[in-house]
Length: 147
Image (spheres, rainbow, N blue to C red):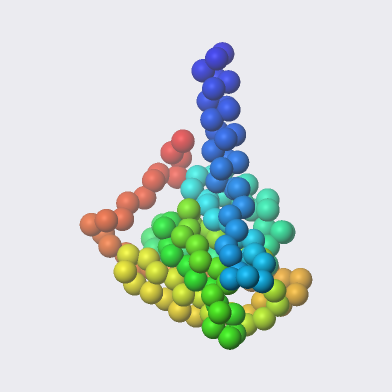
């Protein structure tokens, strides 16, 4: 009984930690709410439940396998080139709330950088995908039914 309570408590703390908002400084004009996570089904479900609070979603995977990745270094800059968000993802999902406008995303994973422009419009959740090349010697997938 004590082990079950301890396990449940640790799981609850892990979910809270994985879904705790992380704020990236906006260099003096405020903060941009941003959060990442999604390692494990519980964390993905917790983030999905919070999507309505955000207007930008980024999903990072490996090309061909669809395997989720984390530790992607992100910078989101406004149209003037000012960085608004700097964040290293803690899972395959990244959510942010950005003012309406045009942005540039720069993302680096395993030494490779992808850059793209995107536009945020009022009342919409924009979902973008980052797909990275597979490295068979480094990549491995956790089985779908793993605890």
